[in-house]
Length: 257
Image (spheres, rainbow, N blue to C red):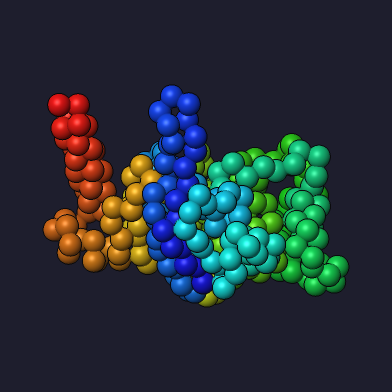
């Protein structure tokens, strides 16, 4: 479903020269799988996901989604993905129904097909009581439901969640995670970025750990535990990050000397 090969994204910086936000990042994600991307702020998670969703173009490397190239076939890629993040906007002057309908029309859905799909989604996500509520009057949890509905209204095979639970209270976050599990059971390919280890342990079939744009480790939780000799994902994560930072500090010291 998703194949990323040596994705690199760099930006010009007048003071430091090129800043590399993503450094030769490669991974594959399959149908019926949640692929987790873990990393602290600035690790490159969002950059990678923006490339996959065609918002950014890579400096080098390539990526395909459901067989379509993210650079040369962006319109086809967008038809096959749903994207949701903590920063997904909800329009104040549109009702929940109008908002989801608007995005369904953007995806080219026919009126009857769209109406039937929305009825199913509003029932499944327990949104019937907010279908006529304006975005300006919605709670955070209500807005998250609308964001989920508009991301999946066109029933895409691939879904991308970028720090989607950030800032949510525990009840709303739990409901979102339950939705992700349901989508996986429907055979969706899901990429789920987070810096919350417990979310990754609960949801993810495989995990990539990133730091400063680089992939440090990848595998199932069991594989990572066996490779690194630790049972707790958080401990594995911190040890990998610490080793990487120690190595970089040593390299900097050697260079300065």
